[in-house]
Length: 87
Image (cartoon, rainbow, N blue to C red; front, top):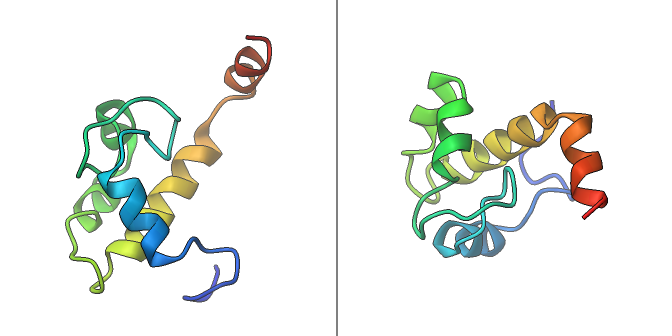
């Protein structure tokens, strides 16, 4: 488990950019602005992680976003990685 403020964590401004952007940090697909992830990635998360994404910025959202993004990326199948590199 990493400590809060780990050097490898994206800074809060990057998390805000991801939040208002249109690219899902979990899969790289399209998402709606002001949503943490695309619909498919959001519903793939365990219920507790989904609930945590409703925290406010500065009150736990950043940690919840980092955790959910790491979880989604860890679930990505090697076959999906190979398909992306072959296109």
